[in-house]
Length: 78
Image (cartoon, rainbow, N blue to C red; front, side, top):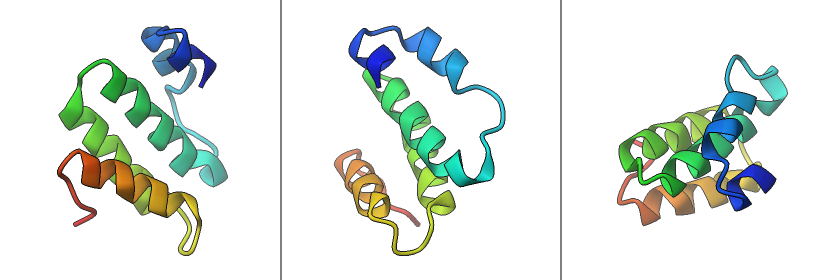
């Protein structure tokens, strides 16, 4: 989040590259989506948000936030 605020997008992507631990996979994908969106890479951001939604646990509050981000981009979970 700090790197996003500082507009250090490449550094943020590098930090989140690789495979996330399973319990953080949705969080990492969501944050990668935020970084990509901030760079104007809408399609890539949409794909990361869809991944985040797929990996988020059912009933997790973050699912609603991710869905809102997808809806704002004109995309849906399907």
